[in-house]
Amino acid sequence: MLNCKHATMLMSQGMDKELGMLRRMSLRFHLMMCGGCRNCKKQMMFLRESCERFPQQCSPIEQSNNE
Image 1 (cartoon, rainbow, N blue to C red):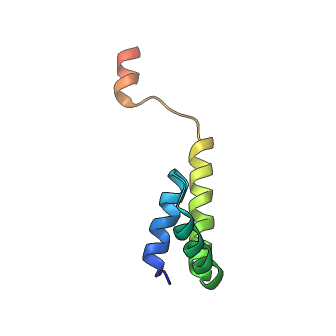
Image 2 (image 1 turned 60 degrees about the horizontal axis):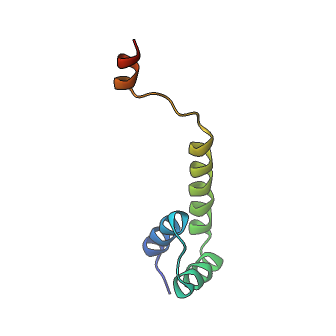
């Protein structure tokens, strides 16, 4: 069974790429048993969605070049 640190790492990796079947199943089993990691996953998903919705702003270097 995964520990919470490894589960968190897999959750993060799973947001960027598809996990293999064994890792995906291990993570699902851990999430069924661990309320803390379920909460962490919800927070990670919220942060990712919020960042995707946040409008992209120019960096300070790009702003100085446009002036």
